[in-house]
Every structure is written in structure tokens, then in C-alpha cells.
Amino acid sequence: MTRPPTAAQRRVIEGADPVTGRLRGTEAQLAALVKRGLAFRHPRPPHDHFLTPAGHRIRETVPQAPAETAETAPDTGVFAARVGGEEEPPASGPARRREVHSAWQGLLELRRMTNPDGAVDRPCGWERTHLVRAAALALEAAGHPPAGGDADGYRVRATPQPEAVAVYAPDARTLAACAATLERAGWQAGEYTEPRTRARYLLASPRRV
Image 1 (cartoon, rainbow, N blue to C red):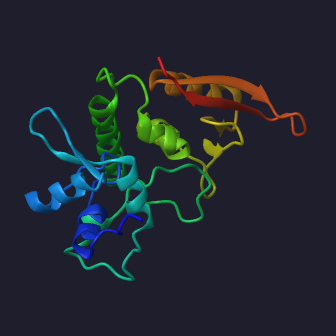
Image 2 (image 1 turned 180 degrees about the vertical axis):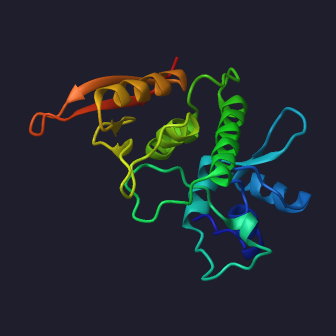
């Protein structure tokens, strides 16, 4: 049975970039994570280290400290794309827009590094395992307003279908705009009608080719 990461290794994993999985640590720490299959060294300069899927799973199970100091908060805070309908959505404004833009650029870089052909116009493995968050990030990064509070906007929800999310919008025009955004971001999107409610929605899946 594989031994769990040491406390020092957990701190390195927990401090990884929440979107790209880029790691910071000593050469010895990073080499140890590579040896355990929790990280890989990118072959192209600057040869940074990134979490593998196994490393991401470890990161998601790392317990969060009950309180963060101002010094550690930037390293351990986790960016969360707005899926719509959150009870306590993150604050909006210029700071949020910068945060979303940075996360989207990080995701494009992750595509470049992890897609076999280096393509940035096609979703990567991380997006296929975080469908709701990935679709929501594409929508929010393009400027679509999510639903929340008194505002009406998109809502991204999981579905029973593999590699597919449902996207709801308040009207047909917004739904079509969301479909266009997702298609530009490398997703396939088609409109459907719920049999019982007659509500229109998008069924979106990451494009493979």
C-alpha cells in the first residue's frame, strides 16, 4: 500500500496553483513527489513541476486549516469559478475580474502543457474531471453573469451523462450566447428541452478533436 505523503509534502501539494497545479518547493521535495507519481517535471523550459491527477486527488483531500494567516492565505486560497446560484458568491468587481482572467490564462497554459499536441483550443484532462468548474470558468471569463441573489444569469449543473454538464440561462438569447462561448472555448453544446418543465438548456461536453 502506498504511504501517504509526509507533512512537508502535503504542504507543497496544498500550495499548488489551484488551476494549473504548478508546484513550489525545494528540489528535494519536488523530486520526491515526482518519484511517488504525484508530480511531473515539464520537459520544456523553465521545467516547472506540476501535480499529476493523483497529486490533484491528494490535494483535494488535504484538510484545510481552521484559520489562515495573512501570510499563508495567498498560497492556500482556492479559486472557485461561479457556477450560478451560490448562497455566498465571491465578491464581484475589478478584483474578481482580475482573478477570473488569471485563472483562465492559467487554464490555457495547462492545456498547452498537458494536451499531447500543445493545443489550447481544446479542453485538457483537468477539465474533463472538473466539468462544472471548467464550464463555469469559461463562461465567467467571457463576461457572462452568473445567477445569484436577485440577479439572473447562467447556472452550470452536473448531469448523469459522462463528460456533460447542463447550462441554464434566463432566456433564449443568453442561452445561445453561452453556447457560442463554450464552443469557442473548445466545448460542444446543443440545446435541449426538459420533458417535464419544458425549460430549455444546453448540454455541453469537452471537445476531443
